[in-house]
Amino acid sequence: MITSRLLWHHFRTDRQPVEKIVRLSVISSVAERDVLMNVGTDYLPSVSVVIPSLNSERTLGKCLESVFSQDYPKDKLEVILTDGGSKDRTLEIGRKYPVRILVDEKKGRGRAYNKSIAEAKSEAIAFLDSDAYANPSWLREVASELVKEPSIAAVYCCQKAPPDSSFLQRCIDTVCYKRDRTGHANGVIYKTDLLLRAKGFNEGLDYLQEDELEHRFIKSGYQSRNIEKVLILHYPRKTLKNHIGQNIEAGIGSVMLYSHTKDKKVLFNIACRTIGLFTPLIFLSDMKYALIALPILASIYILYVAYKTHKDYHKLRCLLAAPFITYVSLIGEFIGYLSAIAMKVKYGLNSLQKSSIAATTPRR
Image 1 (cartoon, rainbow, N blue to C red):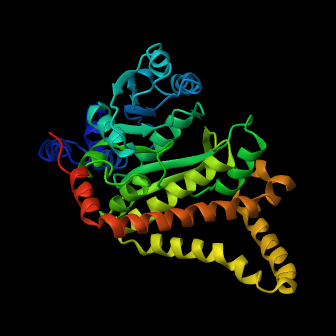
Image 2: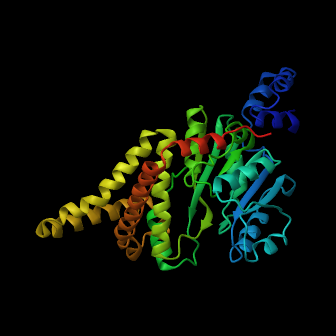
């Protein structure tokens, strides 16, 4: 029978390799060796749940309640609240729960994530936004998937807007919901050793750090998995203005991401979304043609959204709003593209490259 200590050395993908080999050599049967190399879903690793927060008093309590209500062994669960210098009751609420609190007022999600990684004491690290709530089976499902194969570095899951979201939030989520989305930190779980080997998140990026980390994992021969099931509830932006602001950040992040990774898929996505922004404007040059073409294009897009989105959003009013929400998003992203290009022209790439190098220096 394989002991939990042997399973632990399987899960630790690179630490103490000599000891790992020695332990493997003392396994008596081939069957035991095969089981060791493919742990399966019966083994649950210890997990550190990292919750970044900033002025989150309205949502943090419910977020923490969802974490401590997980169907997961409590002796394998650690919760780390990483606060960016909240001025409200966030820390007061956090202290009511058995969590470790880290405070770092320096800006940057990547920095906050890396500080938590350095402090984590578990075999795996999961991330959850402070304004999100997890399904009770979240940790068990993503952790079980994570240990199925040594090559799996990360496991993602689906998220959608909670039932009490406003009409605008549901319309935004109708467009944003994706069953096969990877590269987002909310609800993801990573193997700790692989995060340390990758030297964490790139602090030189202000946005899309998770996508850049995903790119490095894939380039190094690892893979990620996505559970096509809603395990996280997360509120979209409350106002159209905030949604546009979020998309401006996404546009800036996309340009920065391409600057760091040179990933042609990122460039292709930027090109496609830019074409999507200007295509309706081309049709408007001839109003008679536009009155025919634009409704047809909108109808085709609505059918596409209906196919991709969650079944809860198969409501006519949510689907009819999809072309408008998407177009507004494209405007925000294009502003972000231009802003990022302007920053690169003004400041050059040297500062970005230095930030990237600083983000990947080894930890002591």
